[in-house]
Image (cartoon, rainbow, N blue to C red; front, side, top):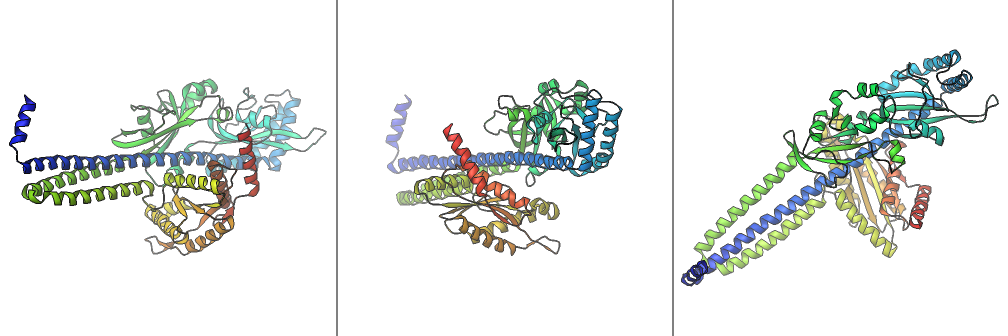
Length: 570
């Protein structure tokens, strides 16, 4: 019956009316298609932005942890070389052996007090300056000779070979990492104290220095330029299996417990509790950062496993916790929703206007429709190009973003592997960028990055590719370039950057410098190896005083090539 009625209506309708309705349906479908394409493209851009930021924050956490460990090793190594400390520990070890081991007797107490007299005054300075939490000395048999932070607690012996001190003592080399022991938790470094043969004894280790710090101090620089936060959550079961019950009760107070987790460190405890209690609680196996509303704001969270020193050494051991890094995406989500509403409004308005003209000018509909389709197709192509470019560009510097840059780098590596033509990598990092932000504010910091990006674009060739791969980190790909040519470009860029003077709004200007690492493509190394080598050269530039360019050490390249060869052989 319905089909019969439709047939009658179609016969009664004039040809012009049929064309009008057919074109109306086509226009409606086209309009909805444009809205759909715009929505899908914008959503993909939002998802890529979330993933890129998550990857950057994950790397920031790893770098912060690595830097903290290096700092602790440096402190422990410095203490291990103090002559008075070495003498007191060595004599204390002999006295403890003569007095039956453990805490020893009067002679051992004498040397323990002598050591405390030397390191006690330094302990307060180390606590204040480096935010240390533990400072201990152990004898070669892993007996606690002196815990400076709890001087009354000594004489016990480490009974597990996977503890940091025991590992350092067994391997006779510095060790670092997150560690859980009987009395506390924290990121630590243990450095053996090695001496020459004296008093007829054989040369070897006569003690171990251990220093430790909390993770809270390293969380601050992970999110210097964006609203985000970091939490380190420990599973309760492995912590309770190692720590003494009274230590657990004292250290992890009720406000630091939630669900199956202990909160070891958190830049925002309230957000941490909300994340654990959310509909998607911490899960290190989550492949894509979830976007959810927490405490009235849209946030995305990146979860990944947190390993202590023992599980990091032995991959078969489970992780001891989870790292949660959240980003406030509220403004980004609201901008996304607003853009979609505007797009939909424009689509509706366009449809109404076009319907009006179709109704009034039906005799000219064919010509006008062809013209409109042409313009619409061009607009779609332009929109797709704009969206694609937006997805590939960093919004602040207009350079390639991290994802797009590494896609281009992979293409260049494939091309170089086929043609055996060289290319160079230049990784640079703005010196003291955090100090610029802290002193002059983030708007000045953003302008510094924009000016640096402009200097890069003015200096590089048309074929070169520059990308912002981190907060203040940039990498430049130079096809068909040797290390000599890359070095020359880096020096020109240093001169160009030296001319930059960013007004601070306080009557003065901010001058900037950068540190850089250089590497030339090597056909026997993969992408990850190239990135590690150029990063190492960059870190050397920063550690040697900044404002300089360092070429990757050939010895490091040779060692990396050997490592890659061994992996391929296996």
